[in-house]
Image 1 (cartoon, rainbow, N blue to C red):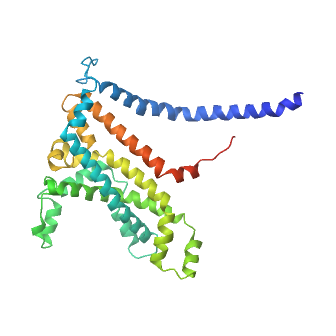
Image 2: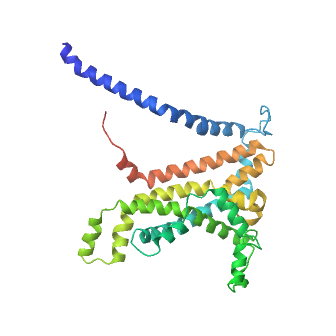
Length: 311
């Protein structure tokens, strides 16, 4: 009888040890996630129901009035439009450029090291924002270069002109984050077996046919992951805008984002309740976009990453 029960008991002990190991190893990450993600979101949702100055206990209950103001405020509609425009332009510009550069860097060509230098990623946002803000001034390096090469007629107020500011922001964003996209695409390219390309070439496929019908489809997982990160980053963009334009100029220049609105209308205006409500709205929008993207775009990748069965 005891021999019959021994194997199930041993299996149960193994499962218990496995669960204990998982709990012990994941506990630090869970604690950090709860303390620095879930708790701040919960506090922001709580303060969003009050008109609060940022100190003392919130007592001026306004209910959903902060959220009502957000949804009816034309200024918030503008920043939401700016975030959406940045999102679309980031996908439309950075994606094709990253794939093209990755294809170049994946081949043995002259100047490959130069191209890698021109698409940096590890430079911090503070350095990038400060450097470009100096170069883009009316008397900065960009206009000086245009004058030096005889294109002085193209000089412009790249930062303050509302017709140019958003395109200036997109140029800076593309230069800053293109390197990360190229790294992802290169990783995807190097995971494709060379035998596939050799077989296509032996069948008479041209270079462009191989790229269009083999390379790009097999790059699908890398492209989808990059697009997801780019979408979330575009919705939460704040650092470059704040450094180059600031919270006040960004509004008149047409580059303000939801995060900048949260800062300007919340902390700087002394209305932390409204700023918390903006943070909650931004979180809900990002979460909804992430869940929809995961459900309809990343579904095939996530399905392949899940292993069914028991330990």
